[in-house]
Length: 215
Ligand SMILES: NC(=O)c1ccc[n+]([C@@H]2O[C@H](COP(=O)([O-])OP(=O)(O)OC[C@H]3O[C@@H](n4cnc5c(N)ncnc54)[C@H](OP(=O)(O)O)[C@@H]3O)[C@@H](O)[C@H]2O)c1
Image (tube, rainbow, N blue to C red):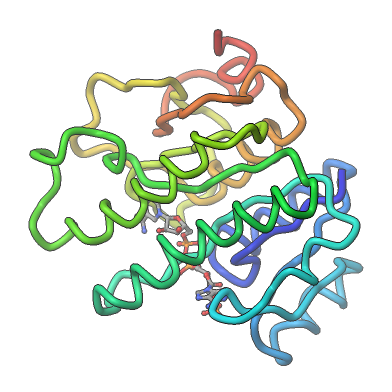
């Protein structure tokens, strides 16, 4: 599949484009700065220069699937979180519909679709932004997956995860960015994940099994 990765220069994004290529897909890395292009070009990965704050419709040419893994970062003001994590994500969904790209994977966050009482005050605007974008996606006819990983780490991937619509025990648990990228790679063309919102943490089940076990 030709997979547009929005946020390709990010910590999940860089891992994801490599894994997609290794798995035989054709990732297209969407980056917003000229100097970010060469690292991908050197690995034979297609790139497109585009910014979520501008018109980025050209990025969708020749694309079969989109993964949104961009984010404004943890220390940005509320307005920037709304601009990227909410409005940027919503525009990305709308552009997919306009371009006739049916498959869309949203990298959301674990508590975004849970009761607001579980949100800390400091994180409220972040979860609100994520949740609004997720709802927008769920209201489309796209073959979507909303993927909601817990706290991300840069430890090496283990290949073992817990992936389901609701994970009971989430406190103190993490997931590596390596494993998030591996899960997205495995689910990108997996119809069992279409129309699903899935929470993701480190677990005991292999990624293949975790995905095939989704009902
Ligand atoms: N941190 C956590 O524990 C956690 C937990 C659950 C979910 N998440 C979510 O997981 C996703 C990926 O996380 P990550 O750690 O890979 O994030 P990251 O390293 O901060 O990457 C985010 C990427 O978004 C890009 N971006 C920001 N503004 C943009 C714009 N205007 N146009 C195009 N691209 C833009 C950045 O580009 P530049 O490289 O040019 O800055 C960066 O490459 C995010 O959506 C995050 O909210 C995070």
